[in-house]
Image 1 (cartoon, rainbow, N blue to C red):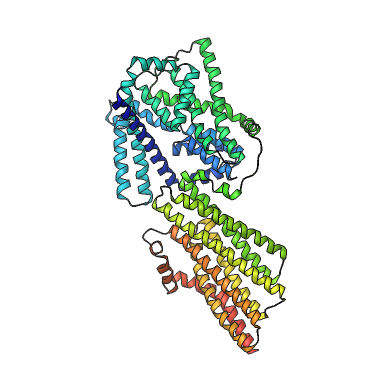
Image 2 (image 1 turned 60 degrees about the vertical axis):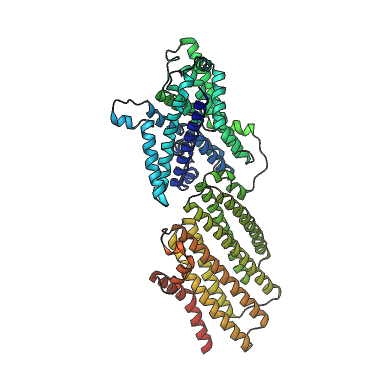
Length: 599
C-alpha cells in the first residue's frame, strides 16, 4: 500500500462522511422540526420511546445525533431523564439501518436488476439524480429530496471507494496478522472505540469494517469486539455535547455511555464464556457486508432487550453518579447551542421562546389595562418582573438567532430566522408600551384623576380591540395559522380609526373646558401607546402570513405593498372582517357619542 492508496482512502472516507452529513441534513429539512416534536410528545411510555428513538435514528442515520437532540431536550426541560432513556436505547437500534443498506454491496451480479442495487452502480445513479434535483429546483421539498439522494449516492460511492482503497492493505501479510490480534476482546474493543471516537460516527466505522470484510480477513472473532467498541466510541459525541449543560443533560449522556458499556460487558462474559466451554462453530467464520450488518443489529437489539426492564435502575445509577447541582436558566436551556447544528430543531426552539415572549407581553398588557380601572401595586410589581424577563428573553433569543444565521441555512430557514428576529422585536416593543400604559395608570392613581364616563367608554372600546388583536396574534403563533394572522390587520385598521376619532373628540373636549389639560395629556398618551401596540400586532401577524405564503406571492416579495393593497380594497375578505370589527368596536362609540350630544 503506497501513499496514493492512503490518499485515496482518506478521500473515500471524506466522501462517505460528507454524503452521510448531506443526507442527514436533507432528512432533517424534510422533517422540518417534526422529529423534534415527535420526541417531545411520544415519550410518555418507555416502549414508545424505544420505538421512536429507533425511527428517528433510522431516519437521520445517526444514534449520536438523536442522543444529542435528547440531551438538548432534557437540558431544556422538555424531556425528563426517564423519557430520554427509551429514546437512547431505540436510537442504538435505528442507527444500524445504514449498515443494512450498505449490505447491498454483497448482492450478486448475476441479475441485472440486483446488480443495479450494488453501491458501485446505485451510488452514481442516485448522486446524478440528486444533483439534477438539487441544481434545477430553486427551493422547496424537491431541492431537499435532491440533497437526500445526493447524500445517499455519495455514501454509496464512498463505501465502494474505501473498499477499493483498502484492497492493497488487506493483501499484506503484516496487516492480516495485525487484524488477527483484534480477536483479543480488549484490543478489539479499544480499536473500535478509538476509531469511532475519532470520526465521531459508529455508522462510518461499521462501514469501514464492512469495506474491510470484502478482503476476507474479517472473522466473527475480530468483528464482534470491534463492533462492541464502536458502540462505546460513539458515546464521545454525546459526552462532548453535554459539557456545560444541566445536571440532567449530563445524566442523559451518561445513560448512553452506561447502556453501551453494560451491554458490552454482558456480551463479553456470556459470549466468551460460551465459546470457552462449547467452542462455538461460527467463531472463525469469515464475515461479509451482510453478516456484519446483521451482527451490528443483533448486538444493539439484544442489549436493548436485556437492559429495557432495568431502565429505572439505569436512571438511579446515573443519578447516583452525577449528584444534584444548581439549576440552569430555563430560557438559556430552551435555546440550547446543541440545537444549532440542526437548524429545523433550533428554529422550533426559537419559536417556542417567541410564543413565551408573546404570552408575557399579552399578560403585561392585560395587567396594565386593569391598572387603569383597578390600581394594584402588587400587579404593577408583577408587570415589572415580567418586563425584565421579556428583556432577558429578547437578548438571549437575538443572540441565538444571529448564531443560527451563521450556519448553512436554506432559503426557507433563512427567511424564518429573519421573520423571528422581527417578531421578537415586536413582542418586546409591545411589552415596552404595556409598561407605558402602566405608568399612565400610576400617574392617574397618584394624582387621583378620573376620566369622564364617555372617555372611559372610549378607552374600553380601544383596549378591547387591541386585546382582540393580541389574542389573534398569539393564536396565529401557537397554531401557525395564516387565517388567524390575517384577522389582525382589519382590527389594526379599526384601532387606527378609533384612535384618530377619539383624539379629535378629546381635543374638542379640551377646547370646551369639559376636560382638564392633565387628564387630556394622559388620555392622548394612552391612545398613542394603544395604537403602537396594535401596529406591532400587525407587524407580528404579517410575519406568520409571510412564512406560510407561496414564494411567488406578493406578501413574500413586498410586505408593505401587500398591506397597502389590503387597505385599498384589494381583498373582499379583508373588507368583511374590517366591517365586522368596526361594527363591534367603532359603531357603539359613534352611537354613544350621538346620544350624548342629544342629551
